Image (cartoon, rainbow, N blue to C red; front, side, top):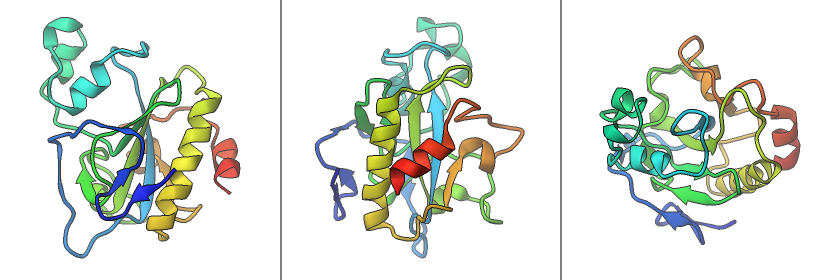
Length: 182
């Protein structure tokens, strides 16, 4: 995978611009990578819900759970679907709204200095092998542009928001992911 450093876009992937982003502070650049998982509706895969959530077009009438989250203004830089498809929502040099209230390496405002990658998944199910392969490819490409993101600066959402978030969950194989990134 290749990243155009000028645009912050991963080449060859679908780009669905999210309005839920802004510029990073002038003195901030990506230093950590945060892995998330999401499924919409919860536990269901392949539908349009994630894209709709990140583009503020989620219809609360489509599912009872959507009534709770339709007004959320969130995004991630990238999503890796169960089949390995990558969708980009926010250019890497911009700030996506993925971390929420969090703390990483003793610092708050984690969105300022992180890149957020969502895996289509749920806490109670293993991820697909292709998702690990694509995630590792993306991680290697991101590290070429942002070398501060070293192998010890890869976090789960649960790591930076303990007690509030559980993703990517107990089925995420950190050892396999780190080995594929090497």
